[in-house]
Length: 257
Image 1 (cartoon, rainbow, N blue to C red):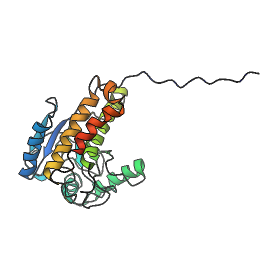
Image 2: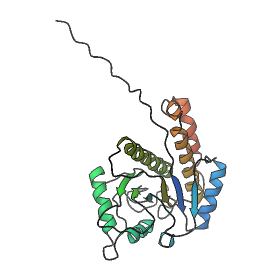
Image 3: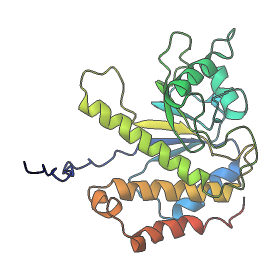
Image 4: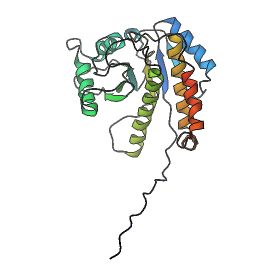
């Protein structure tokens, strides 16, 4: 009998649709970060299609007429939400008599997806439509758990953590929205707007200029990769093409912070 010859693996010809970049509400308590972001927008050519609204405020006093679908937790890998902006999140979304409610909900999701440890630069979407949580009034349905560090610590040694986190955030939102588009019967909600703060700038000790630069570059690169022709550019790169975006990020290493 002849030997059966297996057919070569078939490569899918399905194309990935362009991504919808969410509107970004940037919450900055310190004017230095607003100045740094505005400068980075100009220096690194943030696409005009990306809408960014800056709020010089803290979460507690953010007006409820500011609406967003998801809020970003700068987090730690173990989803303990009790310090810095995570403390503000717990005070906003947990009942007054149950401060750790948000931590419990987040840790349960991290355990299901990561067995309890979400690596830095990963992104985990946590559904806030939960009976143990309260609804502060911004219309927020999800929390994007986005660890910039394993535990609270100086992460100045991690030279690209902000770029990697912003990319992971946008990619996770894109996958979330595509999954909803494919499943009309889901009770999930599309994420069209987010609220986030400067990443890794608290105990992480990143400076404003470096944070702003990597944030803008990551958004710009993701817009390029997610455009109608992005699959032909970013999905089929050779080493020469790969070097260009890498060098742009590497050029931020020596910035303040």
